[in-house]
Each structure stands twice: as structure tokens, then as C-alpha cells.
Image (cartoon, rainbow, N blue to C red; front, side, top):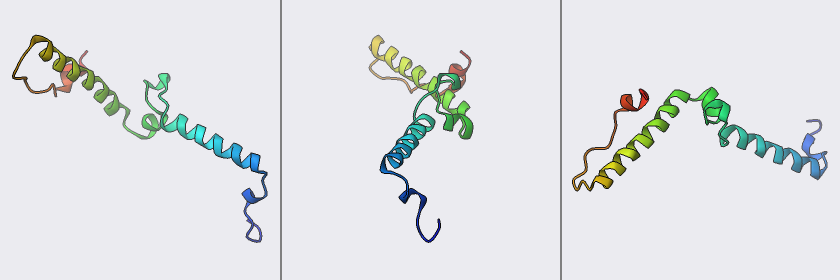
Length: 92
């Protein structure tokens, strides 16, 4: 920044718009889009987070749903506790 003038003030408006759009695309790709090569996780979760914990939670949730639906389909009036044992889900 020379003489208090920023670089972006010298760029044409279309270039500024281009860089802003490119930044939004990169942000979406890294923080929101699920990548198949990374086990349907975002790159941020895969490289900086805890991918094993996320994968375990994703396996546990359908198991809990199946457990709840089974109780509903069998007509159990007093439902049992929700499935909270991740070892049974992780072993599959």
C-alpha cells in the first residue's frame, strides 16, 4: 500500500467482483461441499477436524432411526431407550 492507496482501489470493478465470486466458490468448496473422495466430508473437517468422530456420528444416527422405527412398527407403546451404543454400529 503506497501512499495510503490500496491495491483493490486500482483494480477495475469487474476484477474485484471476479475475486469476490472466486472467494465464495472456494469457501463453499472447502467448508460446505461434501467430497466423495473424503468419505462425504468437507475438506475442512477431513484435514483440520476429527473425521473419525464425524463418521461415527453418521453411522450412529441411522441406527438410532432404525431402532425408533422398529418400535413404532411393532406398536410398542412404552418405547425403550434410544440406541446409544456406538460399538454395535461401528462393528458393521
